[in-house]
Length: 209
Ligand SMILES: CCCCCCCCCCCCCCCC(=O)SCCNC(=O)CCNC(=O)[C@H](O)C(C)(C)COP(=O)(O)OP(=O)(O)OC[C@H]1O[C@@H](n2cnc3c(N)ncnc32)[C@H](O)[C@@H]1OP(=O)(O)O
Image 1 (cartoon, rainbow, N blue to C red):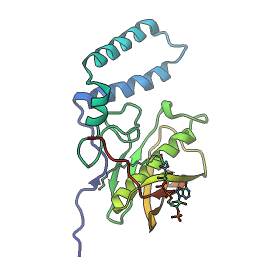
Image 2 (image 1 turned 90 degrees about the vertical axis):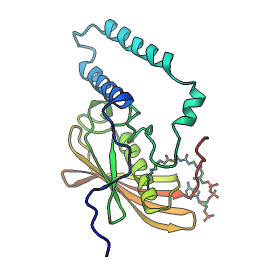
Image 3 (image 1 turned 60 degrees about the vertical axis):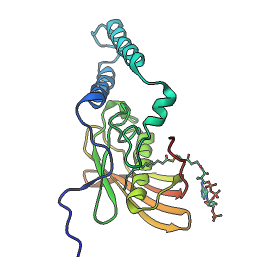
Image 4 (image 1 turned 45 degrees about the vertical axis):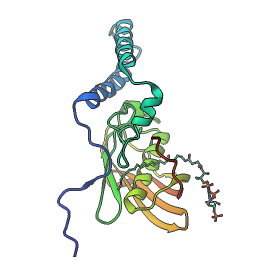
């Protein structure tokens, strides 16, 4: 009999609250604050823009060459830190933090703010698709057979609320040769908002070395 795991298995990178991760957290806050402030804000936006451009200039000045960075960001074999869903180094990632469960599925919890709005007060459908595509992909890794998304079918059952805890789940259903079937859902307050069925084909683009 397998002993119960005391800690959930981390399938996505943890933010370190220092170095680039801390800067990315601050940048996420800036993105949300700009949208919160909007056109009617009394803040001095010219000064804000100048300061943000100065930060970008400083980062560009000290960054490695792009081709070098494109290799380095894929170092190792495991979890990456740059993807647009979970990555602690990626400002556009909400971020969603996924863990593997003993039943073979994966699960994460996230609350989305203004930058992810589609219909009034609710999450943009494309953002839900992004979360589910990635979660199904991680579920395939967790199950041991992964691939590239060939088809992703989404059903939007009810609007997905902003500013509320969302649970995102994924589970591999079947493997038939190179075809992998995976499904998942986004739920809020225990109700399914979006469900997804994915077809993945076992194929991998090699990591650059
Ligand atoms: C321990 C854990 C650590 C955790 C560690 C985490 C790791 C971190 C995880 C990251 C998770 C990222 C999750 C995001 C995943 C993306 O976002 S992937 C990017 C989006 N997808 C793409 O760009 C794919 C683009 N398409 C392609 O490259 C190719 O069309 C495909 C899908 C690879 C298939 O091409 P192919 O390999 O040449 O396949 P092909 O031989 O044509 O077809 C094979 C079979 O599949 C069928 N097929 C192919 N395409 C389709 C289709 N669209 N519909 C239906 N059938 C199809 C064919 O009909 C054929 O069937 P059979 O004849 O064998 O019955």
